[in-house]
Amino acid sequence: MQNDSPWLRAFRGLAGAVLIVWLVLPLIPLAIWSFARGWFFPDILPKQWTLSAWEYALSDRAGVIDSLGLTIGISLAATVLSILVGVPAGRALGLYKFRGKELIELLILAPTIVPGIAVALGIHSVFITLGLNNTVGGVVLVHLVPTLPYMVLVMSGIFANYDPAFESQARSLGASWLKTFWYVTFPAILPGIIVGGLFAFLVSWSQYILTLLIGGGRVVTLPLLLFNFATSGRNDITGAIGIVYILPGIIILILTARHLSGRNGAVGGFGRI
Amino acid sequence: MSDRLKIFLLLAPALTAIIVLFMGGLGIGLARSLNYMPVIGLVDPNFDAYVTVFTSQEFYLSFLLTLHISVTSTVLSSILAIGAALLLRRQFIGRAIINFLFQLNLTVPHLVGAIGILYLFSQSGSFARLAAEWGMISRPGDFPALVFDPYAIGIILQYVWKEVPFIGVILLANMQALGEDYESVARSLGANRWQAFRHVLLPLIFPGLLSASVMVFAFTFGAYEIPAILGPNYPAALPVLAYRKYTDVDLEARPEAMAMAIVIALLSALMIFLYVRISRRNIRS
Image (cartoon, rainbow over all chains, first blue to last red; front, side):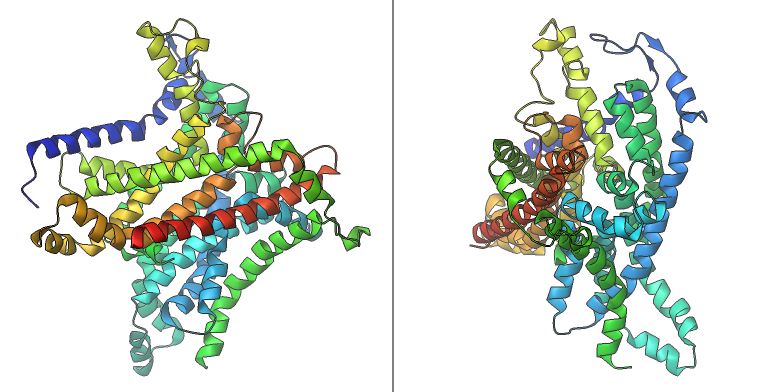
């Protein structure tokens, strides 16, 4: 369709420009606030600029750096756990047809369509008896609930286009189970592990209510810290913590950008639910 | 090893996690909402908590607010995401930037978006300041209430900001996998642009759109932190109300909170069922 009229092209350019502005707009006041000193109505920009919010946020007493480390640790642990649990499940659902498959798919995907709060209050009660409340381990476990469905979804999409015959060929040529996995299976499913792992990390990274309930206020991840500052009206420190909170996601995105292009089958897997 | 055993072993870890954590969480929540806890001697289940929930006016107001938030956000995000995906299919200046911003937006947590919307749209926020600069208002109070407001405009703006890229990325992946051959055939047979979209492309991308928008609906129906930052105090969104009851100093309110959590899950399931039925009927016909 190359015969587009100039009006249509102009409309596209305009819509594109509006979209670009709208996508970055909410992040701008956060960035400005983090460098502002007393930015009052009706000043469009702060009268005075300062680094004090950043000095505070990066100092030892604020606990932001500790919280950043803790949040990265929890999200990495939740991601590794959901890879270990999700890849085998994805293999079963992607490669095999069996009775009750639809029911199991529904069960595994259910956490994406049942609101988190509905499950969280009950899990809190379960964890009281298991002694997992207020512990980092408990928080990692509970993050498995929202992350696992994405991992299984992406991996079943990958395994649906995977030919297990290569594995039996490697085996018949004398490769061990371990070697077959390492040289045949793993390279073939790696793009899925990267995309699914990225989803899992980001889903865990943005959890608020599950961490608040199960962590009982003792496991203070970045979103909890950010929420506290945002509701106490310290906009400058909120801005600085907000920037610290979104940076790791942006860095990971840049590192994995080539795996996320629209042509990667893993993203299209969402159409299969 | 037989296939059955293999499948069972491959699925066992995931099913254990889902059954213990997810089903266990729901099950214990249900038991406690019925005031049934044999561990502490409560062995006679009753529906008191549900009676309390369903006879309180606040619950109905909260439900209506939450339903309004979810339906409006889901419909707006879906329509805008279709537009954005159609736009991103074409070659134009800025396409690479939008593609990057879409993916960047996916990495930004909802909480950050909510705070950004708060700083933009509150009565002393960036837009109020611009309005004052242009002489449209003289005091912050003159600016229309777009956050903490009864229509939840701020919350909906935040969801649209976050969910258009989410649905858009999924739709774009679907569209690129389909190519443009089907539409070209329809066009060459005399269909106009709208007909080619409505009767050829839309039914083809519909499964992806449906699953993405169902996820958006469920998320917006059950999210806590966004209405907690941007929403009105009374009536609060259902998840905020449930959390308040759960953390009430009065432990008597806990079964009530559990009942509300179960009602949220059931309502969400019911809404999704209706949504899937209605949209299937309208798109496929």
